[in-house]
Image 1 (tube, rainbow, N blue to C red):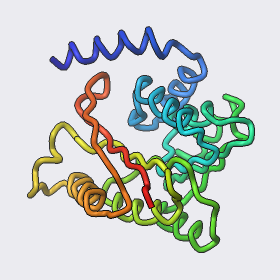
Image 2 (cartoon, rainbow, N blue to C red):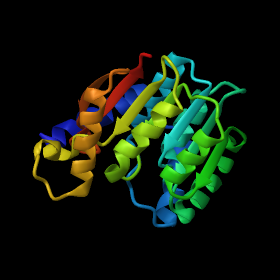
Image 3 (cartoon, one colour):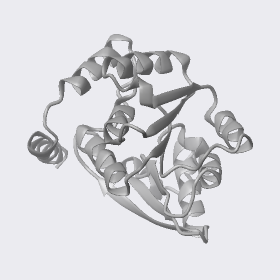
Length: 221
């Protein structure tokens, strides 16, 4: 079935995403610098782009930059007055992402903050950063609940919050897992379920990135 899922994913990607050389060059540059291949798939990137477009997002917050693949999808969804702020712990990853986004001619709309995301988020809250229309959480899963707590402080009514990699080949079902990433996701899902100001759902995905999924929430207060 895995082979079938990948073939179907490739079919839809070819038909509906297409082949943009900007993304190909970005991934090639990531590989050249030895970055891990943890980017979203082309179909998932297009989905994020469409969500941002549907929302009419002017301000997007991304927690976890890596080489800037999803950042580029978000940047392409922004109007000329839009802004993306992306948080990245690893300075090497951030440098590669900046190089990639400059090459794609979107760097003027993207700010990459380097350092521990929790610290960057805390500073943003304390400095009363303007709220965001869409927030994408795709960093170390162990801290997902921390990121959600800060995301809510940087949100407003109608803000969309997306949490990536929540299925983890079904490992999310293992309540006694010793994997901190799984426990981080489970805690995150519990927080989504319990929060009175969030309406959430999880979507399972299959394809070139295997069996995984994401949560999507809307802030209702």
